[in-house]
Figure 1 (tube, rainbow, N blue to C red):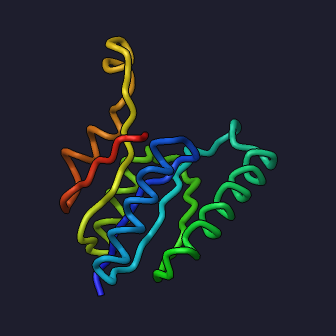
Figure 2 (figure 1 turned 180 degrees about the vertical axis):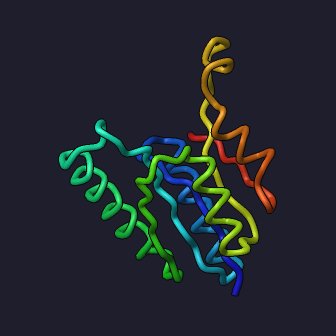
Figure 3 (figure 1 turned 90 degrees about the vertical axis):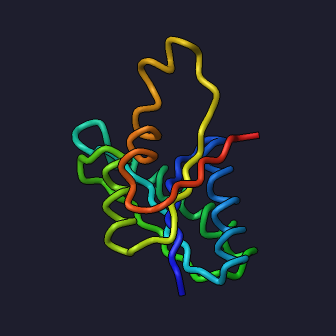
Length: 133
């Protein structure tokens, strides 16, 4: 059984990636590993942890509809989300990674999007980039 890794954030692009990854996992009879990554530190407090846990419970509930083997990893260890996705995909010898993308302003393209770019360029496997609706 293969493994698909998906980067999840509780935003439209994260939800789009999750849905597409679940569809692919079901289609391929693969295991799905959902990675939710936070930098941690002083800015990530108890309230943030509780909010994140509720968001991940929503993910668990959504994945029940797909009837697929899955695992959710909440990583709070100070790494960039791209580093976490690449590390998990490498560790699991993933078939591919699914990430969500959103439209950005010209200035936003210069400042943001580095995580998606890093995953696309440094991943040990193919990457499926999904646009949010």
